[in-house]
Length: 243
Image (cartoon, rainbow, N blue to C red; front, side, top):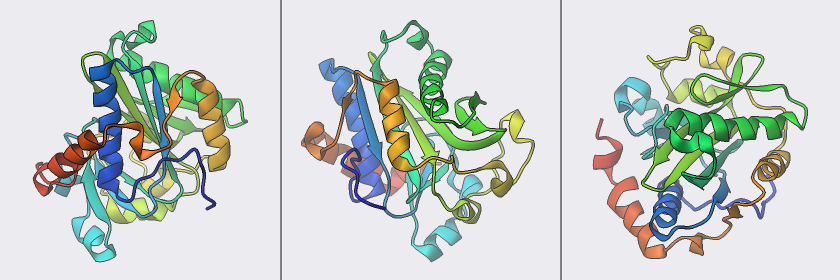
C-alpha cells in the first residue's frame, strides 16, 4: 500500500499501543482537546484486551511459528489480529464532549454511531451491533474497546478493509464470550472486509470528527511518557502474559 500522511504508525505493536495510552494520559492530565489517530500495523500481531486470557483466546504455538508478536492493550474488549489491511482508529474525547458520554455504554454507542454514519454516507449499509461492532448484513468488519480516565475517554476501533481473514482463524480460537448475533459462526463466516479503501475510510471518519486534532508525528505526545509506557508496560512480558 502507498504511504499515507494521515497515518501515524510506529515500528512495533508495543510502541503503537503505548502511543494510544500516552494520548489518553497526556490529554487527561493536561486538559487537551479532542484527539484522533489512524495507524496500520505493518506486520501481523495479536492484541489481547486488558482482561482476556492468553491461552484461552490465542493459539500461541501458531503465533510463535509464524513470528507473530502477542501484545496486550489497557482497554477492554476482545482479542484481535491486526496488520496490513486493518485500519486502527483511536478517538480521545473529554467526558463532557457529548451528554451520552457520561456512561461507558453511552460513549461506545455515541462514538461508534458517528463512525457508522460516516461510512454509510459512502454506500455500505453499516449497522452497530453487539457492544460496539460495525457490521454489514450481520457480518462484522470492526470491533472496538474503551478506556476511561478521570476526564477523558479513549475508544479504539479496528476496521478490516483488505485483511486476510484466514490469519484470524490461524491465530485466534473461537471466543467463549460471543454477541448473540454471531450465532456460533466461524471467523470466516462471521468476519468480512468493508468494501471501501483505506483512504476513503480515513476521509469518512475524519468528516465525522471535524474538530479533533489529527496526530501525525510521534512528537505529538511527550516522549518520556511514551518510552516509559512502552518499556514499563506494553513490551513487558509480565503485563502481556499476566492472564
